[in-house]
Length: 347
Ligand code: TRP
Image 1 (cartoon, rainbow, N blue to C red):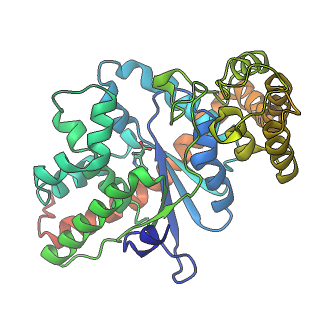
Image 2 (image 1 turned 180 degrees about the horizontal axis):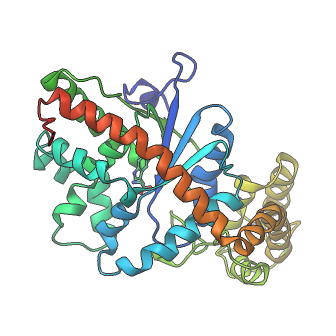
């Protein structure tokens, strides 16, 4: 954690006052418990403290899903529904549809002149993601998504970007691009800081290091309880444990790691002790976890069904947020173009 703290791109909330948060997701499908633990929960907390903008990055989703643009609309809706269900409050948070803000694309074009290709090729997150997806060739759009992400951030004048550690290279790049832009053109775009969430990952049900839709090892926030129960039942535990009385090793157990993420201190301690001493079987331990997750999701389901019965309200929230954000975007773009001396007009 020390080395993270010393990174100039990482925010220090105890030293500086930040004003506007920008976070976002690619709408590629329903969000899952990993998203909740890694970012949504934090956003719900942060929206009380900072002005919060949340971007549904549909254009960025195309960088990996360009064959199916027709799925974006439904996915945007589902992501918005997940946000609202988990407690993102539209009176505190502005939710934005990326493709409805054309200024982002324009600013991306200007920023793209200031980045050479090699650092993008060597960007560790790009590399990992390309490998995970089995890409041999990278499209221009995929390679360049950190540049458009820089435009996302700069266009809304956001100074605090809550992200998982994997996104840190992108924030570092964003700072470099903005600094260069400001120096070259004597502009005053905001340089962002990353707010790194410590508990940023949830393992998959199969024990894979990451819960992810593409690995098929996720519990979605919108899954019904029967499905969740089945998924939890099939989750990987300590494989050496055959009988309930066998002594287990919670450290290598998926279910225990979920207890750590969702249960209260007492239950975590009890689970650890009972598992290590063969006092609880995996079946019972999984039942305990199911109860906890059910409790977490119940209030979310209530909000979810309200908005499912009032779909227009969801779109209204999205359009209102996008409109509000669009005003800031056009201001920023005007400033950027003026500083570049390219603000010609027809009149
Ligand atoms: N790249 C982010 C992700 O995959 C999503 C994203 C797009 C984002 N634009 C952003 C995050 C701007 C923070 C700020 O999770």
